[in-house]
Length: 288
Length: 293
Image (cartoon, rainbow over all chains, first blue to last red):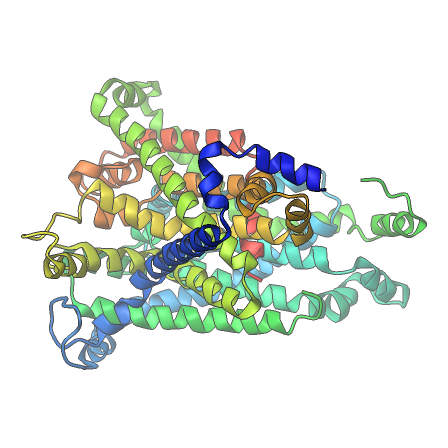
């Protein structure tokens, strides 16, 4: 061991010998750790700041952006909740997001069962295809969906959005539910079948209760994927049906008011609450 | 991997019994296939077909003969590359810290990664507009400290696009690296240290090579997503920092040249798929999302 150590030290360039004195080494080590810590602190600040900056801005009395914000008011929130345009967009998006959550969760869970437990020859191709909407740039999907939907008068329609957002949300469901299914011991399902349950009973009584945290997490991801989606919504919205993402995009581009900060704060709070719910669900999971 | 133990061979015999019948498997997958055909395959195929409208390659000739359009394609790839490298350099230490810290502190770091990840890209782009604008927070701070005499032009530049995109994509880099580092047994590093390696050497010889699958997964994910970014460059970028997605957006919403937009989309799609296929083995979509829970 000591010979090995000597060899390792012997490889150090002579110029580094200064650093081998114990005190100097301890000092440089401390300084390096401090520098790395400060650097990582800056990165964390960089990650968090843009998201959280919208909260103080939404409470500022001035109607231009100022930092630190002056005064304390809820008037931008009341402006948001009393604006028919904002409310129409919010309800439209909420309806679509809820319908998308239901559709994507059911369709995605069924497909995940087929991918993990089924015997289709093209399973991996199906999985790759289902993840496609995540990889293909959303601008391309937006343009493509507009071209396909416009002749059918589906732009700005509930059904058009439902189809588009289901396709966008399904990858999250497939990834999450597939992972849950792979962690679930299939012998339990076999035991249920042996005891006389049919496939459907075995699924609802044995498999589903065991993967329910994964399915619930998938539902949350599907909701957020739909509600926060803006690129595809930008193309398939029209005057009659406008999602909150489209409305925000327009306002940021043309009409930068603190109302957007209030809307953003509401959306950030919603996302955080939902993510907290997922975290709690998974904390209760037996063998995670 | 060989199933040599009697237990695992019994398990594998059992597992063949858990397969759904072909008709049941097909029935389970059918709704997804229907949704993908209606909302993904058919529209994309139609778009690609539109780019060849009139039976000519004229639109493609236009893309590759005009230096402006070719420049946009190259600068899109360049920006995606810069964003990927920036996310890797800045994100790696965060992932490392998240994997190595005690549970409570690691949770704080994880929150810093997850809060932006689950915030709409729109909100984060809006925040960057506010931070970087002429009388924005960053400029006010720089004036107060006395670094500059007048407000700097920060927003509507290529730099602003790179900064904001790095912010949006960094979690996609951090999470796969975190998963790779978490899977690395701490014994390996202890063994390296016991054999006389210093902390730097143990990191370079053990931790770094074993984290590479995560690094590749995160890099490919970041790069591919960056190629198609629309919202962020559209809001914080200017006319001088046109990317493929913003060019497509401009062709469709301002110039209404749909066949040309379709050709640009097809080129962007081809570039994206090319990179996905090249790095298919390293791209693990599930890795990042699975570490969410």
